[in-house]
Image (tube, rainbow, N blue to C red; front, side):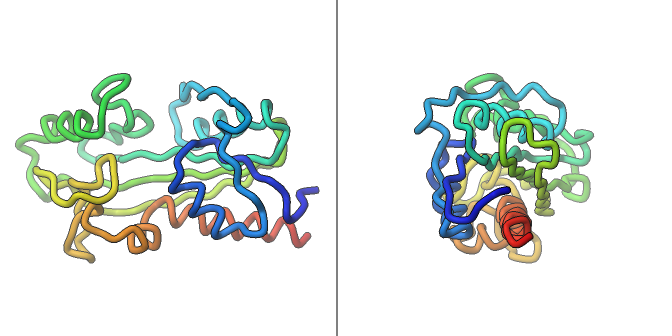
Length: 202
């Protein structure tokens, strides 16, 4: 049985994610997997949920603690879902955010605005131990479209070209608080924390 007020490992070293999850899951203590010297897991699956579970189980085997992991990316309709699970390495292994954005813009050159619909997807999972047969799984989706040039200096990844019609700005023009409220990751995290708290109350 998962107990309140214990450590939960985050299968990531992202400081922003750690702070955000810590705020929502107090009094649990969120610890990055690097504290336990967990090596990065190869994301070899073809779906977000499988990759998230790979990362979670990899961390749990090393830490012997409950783990939260996520996998996210950008899905472009006209590209049949690409870059998808390869979003972070769309321009190749070790590619920078700028490299990935530039490759996507080149790929979409000549595509009319009406066909540039896209969405960010985040799958977030929680497991109590490495062999947990019933992981908690949450999904967030953030609908938008893609510009043909970058706008805004906040965020990361594809944020500068991800246009939000209802906000009349790109994701990279939002404040951190606004992005956390609207984003795919924020949606998934709120769903997952609700599931974790529900499990604790059983």
